[in-house]
Image 1 (cartoon, rainbow, N blue to C red):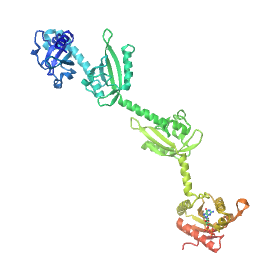
Image 2: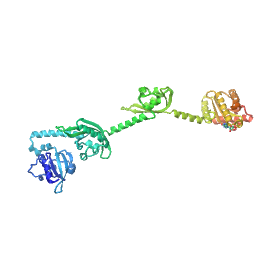
Image 3: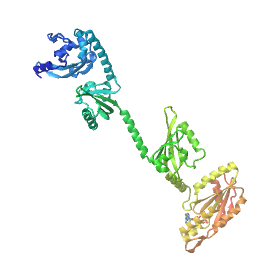
Length: 545
Ligand SMILES: Nc1nc2c(ncn2[C@@H]2O[C@H](COP(=O)(O)OP(=O)(O)OP(=O)(O)O)[C@@H](O)[C@H]2O)c(=O)[nH]1
């Protein structure tokens, strides 16, 4: 810009404009600025080299700042804006300054000659009012900014600076578009168009501002437009609230709702009395009861009567005390069927610290129970005959011994070994031998009273545990009937009939052994004596050696 052009601009401008050098010395001033400063046209500007500092005490930070960075409000001066650097013929850097707030200058004692007392009073109260508005703008807990129709920021407050992470000077050099997330710009622009066209008076939208550190912040933006008296757009007023936390919470809730909807486990929310408030789709699928069916129903109504006595009372007490409970339960379905479930309940506290709600999560463990039962069956039963094996016999025998010690009752152990069983295998084949073993197991089982156990120890050996036996003489008819039923012919294929006899040894607790192993051993030895004596007969143990 030539010196001549620069002087023309200064002369023609009606706003207070001046030129300052990098050290803030006033190089030139137009008539408006001279009026503000109270400097007559004839007086040379060189007479006031430190015009700002001389007349108004300045913030030291501000003085340290170069005019190039200046676009801020200075409490004692008003608003100074740098409108650009001027290339002067002497090559010394100079800056075109604009001064807002001529009123203030008129009110200053230095220009008191230009005002009468009433003007001064009026100006003072206007200044106070203006101070209050400025404080409201500056200290508002909401981000506030004034934006020119071209999108550049005219004024921004501290909260908006905090929200975006930019300083005021940095923002005043930018447009709102520069700091709007690309995905949110179109919506913002569309609203602005409507507002400029006069179709809407204000709009609110959630958008993301790009922060100085490269992150973005969610904000709720409310915008209105200030027009000039002749209706032309002057500037937008934008209020910005940081809603990142709200958005994060909403996202968490949406995610939680999705999880709730799509979980494979049944979920219910209940009040503190365990009345159901809400259930998820998996709950409805598993029980057959939808949310409308069970809202308000007590959890007890959905649990089957297969629960142990006092179950619900214990559960409620534990929940009220600890806020959590977990364990096996039986749920009732709408069809009347019941299914086992693993249920875990935990409480959430209300404002007062009391348990307010309980959230229950359960999964159908029918399959698990079936597998468990199968595993138990496999581990405790003989696969060929399906009767208990040695492991289960031992455990029942130990349990019976414990009981007998307390109740002083006798236990009898009957050891059965089939006679010449190998011959059946050798003569008719292994399958025939299997058939004999299965049939003998069935016949023995049929002879037992409930509470007694028949087990296959392996090979052709069976043991019967008879609990609550008064004395050995009462056993004889029973054992004789066992031998009889074993000897009955066994029909095999092609009309072949198989017969087998057995040798039997009997031991009694506590007379012939004090634990499971010694009792079985005694009965085994009694049976072996029968074998040696010719087989096909019973014998009682003769006691410990
Ligand atoms: N079919 C079949 N045979 C089995 C099974 N387990 C063992 N055995 C056979 O059962 C026979 C048991 O024979 P032993 O008890 O030793 O002899 P035994 O022929 O019964 O003669 P004594 O006991 O002296 O009367 C053996 O030949 C085994 O191979 C089985 O699950 N099925």
